[in-house]
Length: 336
Ligand SMILES: [Zn+2]
Image (tube, rainbow, N blue to C red; front, top):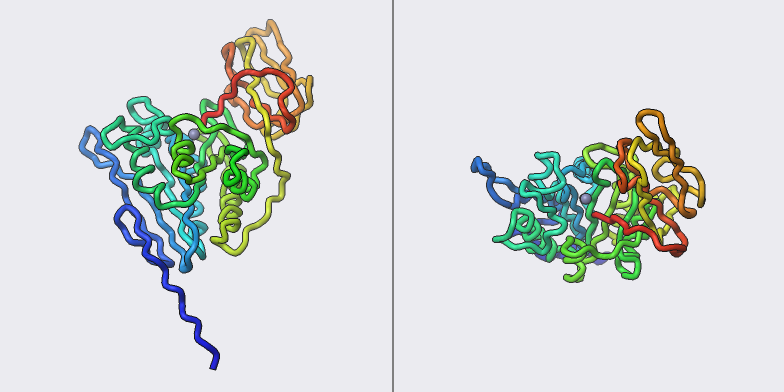
């Protein structure tokens, strides 16, 4: 008689004081604070646990409340049960900054940015309190994570992963995700990425689309990339390979407006550009002048302004190069 395989008993998995059994999804509402009207505000966390042991992956979005593509990405993954792994667990937080979400705003009501408020404190500012709950209630229970963002201020980002390319774990997660672009981005002070890195929990950032606008290409890129990360971590058996080329951006800079006026782009987000190529114009609104904009070097458009009304110094186009830097360029705006 063949030996009967006995199922390996799953160890206890408890998060925010709630035990999550194998093969189940559990919703935990993390109490954040109350509105002035007394209404309690909580952050829903969905813990999806597979039937077999494995790593724990954190997926979170809406840290900036107006960046809806990440929220939609996680909504679809929850709806279609793509967050339920075979092995391990996925901790999914679709909206970290509930206040910003209901106010159509990046920040919390006092103007603070949650992603500049880590590790936060239970008695700190509202942004610091949200950060504190993420860091103390959630991050200790996960092995690694993906934080979903979009371009801000009417700028769109072509789907890209931002991470520290010198870090082996970051690089492995980014390559597994296989986005169209991987952008080397140093850790920002007081960001989730930096604070989690200090706890030895690698978190990479996905950027795709624009705030307050759904971008189907960015959403689908985010879902497929996340599934590839889950397959890489052996949480699911397989994921569809990327159909696009993956490019590593070693250097990037924003092309800024030298003149105020109306910006017309001749290229699209994701396009390749050649050095000196005319990539757009800035025109006087009364038909007086027209200034041609040229690409400073060979590269790809990884971010693009959608608002045609520009002031002097406004960021118009984020151009990334796969080559090492050839000249000194303006400071990069790498807000995540
Ligand atoms: Zn963001």
